[in-house]
Length: 518
Image 1: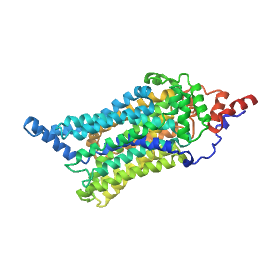
Image 2: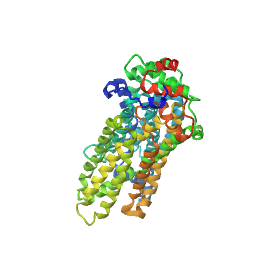
Image 3: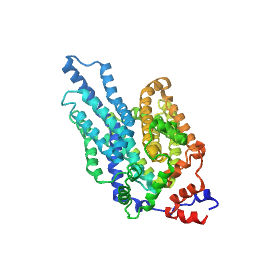
Image 4: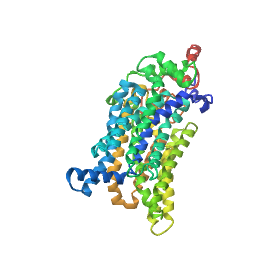
């Protein structure tokens, strides 16, 4: 009792993943991600295979309307808008998510969001039949809105329904399904499947399937118990939700943990973005999330796809087998994300992030060397391709999914919606910035362009090493208090610190007994 800080280091009793992973929790994680992050990943890759056919459709439609072929500059402009407007929609979704979540809750937001996916699937798949390329552009915009909302609402929902001992593993469903979506888009785009001129519209019709599956399952699963208790003040519903997710009757400890978090906050109602930006108590949490989300996009993974086919061609691979070899990148992504989800609770968030960014910096450096030697050494393109696979694996081992987990973990309940909105805006703006500036960087630096990403990854790893605390197996309140010193805010008094200890290591009912013995 006389050394409360030392008590915080007491380890929790070991708990296996299988003992905490109930059917309800697994269903919520899988189907929640299937209709959300899976669609985001699928849309990242699905436009590559039918690009030639879509451009031909633009030309045919133009001739039907104006009686002359479309110019090369115009078709390039229309195609660029079709691809890039996805990020614009994502930004719109990220900006609106905090308001939608406040009204509909976490699960309700995910359910309503499926409407955007279904409408987008109809527009994209029927655009050719309607002879309207505008429908494709609007469909991509709506799909972006769906992804912008999903990438905020889903990590928030998964983080709040998971026991803290497996919160990271459950949160990695977001990353795993993104990678699986990318791989599925690549696979369905093969010529033997839907990557044909007569079938490319079915690639977009497929978007409706995951959304419909989520609509069939998610209504039967509970809302976030933290949302029900702290924002809706419905303790009975929160208790039932905890019981279903955790698979046990006695959830008094979990309820008390949420009550402690509520008592520790000045205001348990969701704060606005402006209030979050002005609050010095969360300044470094916010700065950390902004930096991690910026690095998530600026680390260069999206750009790596531009080089893959070129390197494969220079390595001597025939053009007709390139789509099958490219599948290896999607497979590596998925396997790395699954591996990360299995080890995150053992290794921790911080080591995986630092390793991921550090390894990316190393392999980007090697890739730069190999690219400059490709013309002089015949087998050098093979090493370049191996480097590309290693960059992808490094990204998915930590930076590919943990930033979304940390955005939910670094903030208490009232700040979380605003934090996810800011993180989403940074994510989509950074995505847009990379697509806009990299062609100019590549033009100026040529094969040395990847050195820009070496700098970004290195600086990100250094910042995380010195600033980010480890968050695994900690309550949201304990994580917030770990930033108290750097934020220069008061550390909780002994009584409140004692509650933190017990919420981590014991039954909250023992608070009164221990306090009476002091």
